Length: 192
Image (cartoon, rainbow, N blue to C red; front, side, top):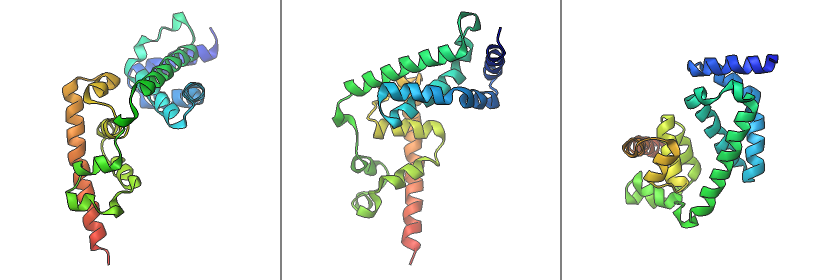
């Protein structure tokens, strides 16, 4: 057995035990290969990054599904990547373009109509910066629902979570985002 293969086995054992440092080491070792393969398939940097993130999240959640006796870790990761990238492409092709909501559609969830009509707040960067302050699971659910056009049931399937959990994450995330948004407005209005 090669040293690399033994290192991979040890790394996966640590990941099964929820060792975050081990996941970081795995990403350092294989992240570029996963991203490169995803990019070759999806032909889009943002989608390739999403696929890469999905793969390492799947490894974190399902590390015990890799069987060292059946093959190398790198082969398993690249097979997962290939399948995930192809699935992502299929979902993109099936999803009608109208499903993508614009920032204009998103604003009423955050603020009252007068503020939503203020062109200063139609900058998507502001929303994206505020999203970064939310808990990751809420930010991810909102991102997929409002910027990627996922329905609640599609979110539940993609995240492998119960529908109720997805709805709660979106609702709580929107509530927090609204508070952050209102704080940002107050801060902006208080400036001379």
